[in-house]
Length: 593
Image (tube, rainbow, N blue to C red; front, side, top):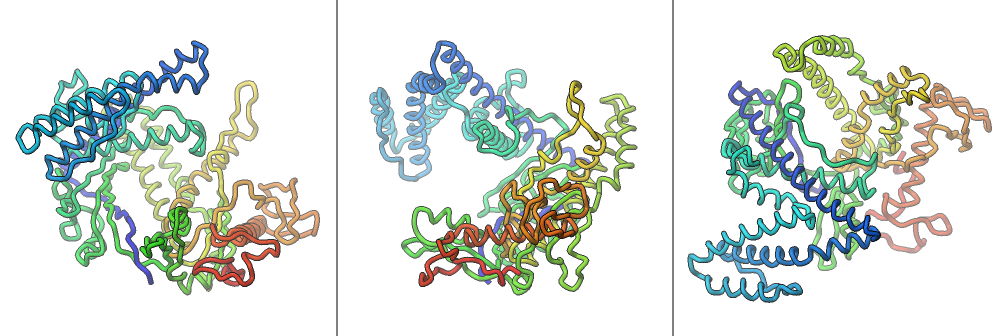
C-alpha cells in the first residue's frame, strides 16, 4: 500500500484550571484584537480607493478608465515602495549571512534612488553600519506603505499589517497601540492577521463572483465573547508544542495543560517518527476549551496519484484532480495502488440526502444487514429542543449584562455545544463507513442555502405554510448535510475511494429510474413515485438513489475517472488499439457494482 504525507488534526478537550482558563481567554482576546486591527486597516485602504474611483466616475470616466487613472496616480509611490523594499530585503539577507538579491531593474523615474541605495549598501558592507541601514530601511518601507494604504493605492496584506503593528504596538492604548502585547505569545497576533487575510480574500472572491452563495459585504468585526480562538506555531526542528505523556499538552506561553481524552495515538506516531506537529489551534465551544493539534503524518493510503515529471521526478497527490492540475504544464499522471477488497465489493453507492431520513443508500452499509440502506436522522436538535427552549426563556428573563444573565447564557451555549459535538461524532462515523466501504460515493450537489430559505415572505405578500417550512428547514439544518459533504471530500481521498458530486439540477427526483421518462408534476413531498409512462410505482427514495447511481455512471464514463478521456463516436473511451497509461480509461460497470 503506498504511503504519503497527510495533514491531520487531532482534537483534544482541555481540562484547564481557573488560571489557565483566564490565560486562554487572554490569548483568544489578543487574536480577536489582531483580526479587528487588520480588518480596519484593509477596510480604510479600500474605502480610500473607492472614494478616488467615485470622484473619477462622477467626472465622466468609465470603470476601467477610473481604475487606470488611480493606478497611474499611485505609480510613483508604488515604485518607491518596491525600491526600498528590495533594499531592505537585500540588507536582511546580507546581515543573516546569506547572498544578497541580484540588482533590480530600476522602475521609470527611480534610477537615482536605486543607485544611491546600492552605493549605501556597498559602503556599509562588512561593518556595523549595515544594521543601522537595515533599521532605517524598515522604517522607511513601513512609512511609505502606510502612506500608500491611506491614499488608497494599496491594500495591506497580512505581512504588511504585521509590519505596521510592530511600529504601533508600543503606543498607548488611546492611540491605537497594544502595550499589553508582551503578556501573550506573538503568534496570537500573526494568526489574527492571517485570518483577516483569508476573510478579505473570501469577500473579494464573492465580489468578483468566484465564490458561490449570496454576495457578501466587508468582513465584520468580531465581538468579544462570541468566538474565542487562536493558533500557535513553532519551529518543527526545535518543537515546543508537544504532548507530555498521554494526558498533558504543552503550548508556548501557556505551559502544560491537562487534556480529557488520551493522546496515545499521536504520541506513538511522533515517537516512531511518523508524525511531526506543525501547529495547534485552541477554540472555546460552550463550556469547554478544545485544542486541535495539526500534524504532518506519514500515512498509508490505498490509492495514490503521482505526477511524473518529464525528468522522472514523482510528486504524490491524494486525488487525481490535483495530480492532473499539476501535470497541465508537462508530465503524466499515474495511479499507484487500488481500492481495498471491501471497497471493490461495495462498488459505487448512491446516497440520497434529506431531512426525513438523513441518507438513503443504493447499497447497504453492512452487506449482511439490508436494513442499513436507510440511515435514520438522529434529530439531535429535536431531542434537545425542550431543554434549549427552557434555557433560552430563562435567559430572556434576565437583565442583559448581569451575573444571572451570564450564567443563563452559559447554559444555552452548553446545550448548543452538546448538540454540535454529538452531530459531529455521528457524521464522522457515517462518512468513514461510506469512504471505507465503497469505491465511489455519489451525492447530489444540494444548494442548502436555497433549500432552507424562509417562506415568511413580506407584509404585502405573506408566505404560505410558514410554520411547516420553518420546521422542515430546522430538520434539514439539523442534519448537517454540508458538514457531511465536507467530511466525505477529504475522507474519500484518505481511504482510497472517490466522491462523485452530480451536477446541480440533475433530474433525480422527478425522473423514473426504469423508463427514464421525466414526470414534471411529481410531488416531492409524496412518499411514492408514480410514473405516467410505464406505470411504475416505487418508493421515492428508492427511485432517487437509482437515478443517482445512473447519473454517476454516466458522469464517470463520459469523463473517465472524473478527468480522463471523453467518449468517441463509437461511444468508447478511446481508440480500440490505443494503449492507456495506468489509471486511465473508462470505469467499467462491473467494477462499480
